[in-house]
Length: 310
Ligand code: NDP
Ligand code: OXD
Image (tube, rainbow, N blue to C red; front, side):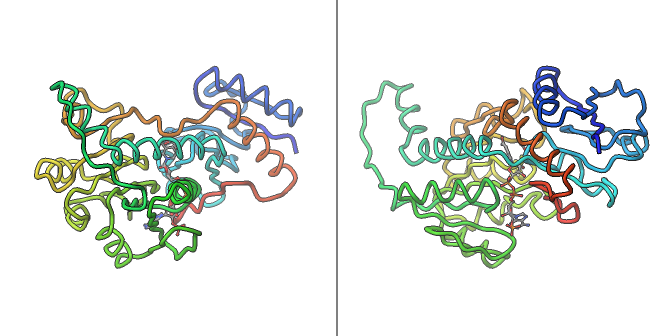
């Protein structure tokens, strides 16, 4: 079958992906949202977000491709059962996330926040250096990204824990699951990293209770989704000194409002949702490969369980 596609997103990316897809599947019909001559003929949509009436406008869509790894912004529970939802799995995304988390862990582990504040006072003072095996990093989420991040930190000598919904085994990583598993893991954590998808269960997971379960002086890195953190609870825990540092890449409302206290908090580091960015070159290849698989009747890579939400 010739696939009839609609792409919704930035023009440069669309042009790049169109070329890659047409090279791989020359009979594909590529349209750019909202210029679609016969909406009833559209088989698939590629987008980051979609308006509410999408499936009325495009009644015969069979697949929606997220331009990123996450799918919460597409509201999976709103997508009809008959439509497949595909998230992006791309080694380039995984590598970027590994370097983001590694640099964030190092910023905390090697006291860069502290030396930054000493620099402001021209203060020359040395502090003891902890070794990686004296630092426990706990990863929330052991999926495509969490697994790779955990393995990399473990290979560098950090003690690594990982938490997921189902039980897992991962070389060099102590694994936990379920509520009790979460409490046990948090109690033994220096740096907590969220790489969870946003679902009803993960919304607000990092709250006053979970933060209180962390030992005093622990730090938090969030590269999952902003709504996983109750911001007021994190700010209170930072201000009380219970939590030492927070490195945040994702926020409930993006861009982060100019008035948000995170911007000015001396022990919070903010990045603008750049932990891992969809690359036009490699992600275009992944899209073309998946379309080929679909055309050949094979399962696609990254099919989402819409009920579960990830
Ligand atoms: P995956 O879907 O591959 O993995 C999700 C992991 O989270 C799984 O291990 C899953 O457990 C676990 N999980 C989900 N729900 C729960 C729960 N209720 N309790 C415990 N564990 C749970 O996702 P990825 O690793 O590819 O990506 C994770 C998220 O990272 C994305 O959804 C996105 O939000 C975010 N992201 C952020 C980026 C950024 O730039 N900041 C870039 C890319 C992604 P199980 O294995 O048992 O199913
Ligand atoms: C993603 C993201 O999900 O950029 O890919 O957050």
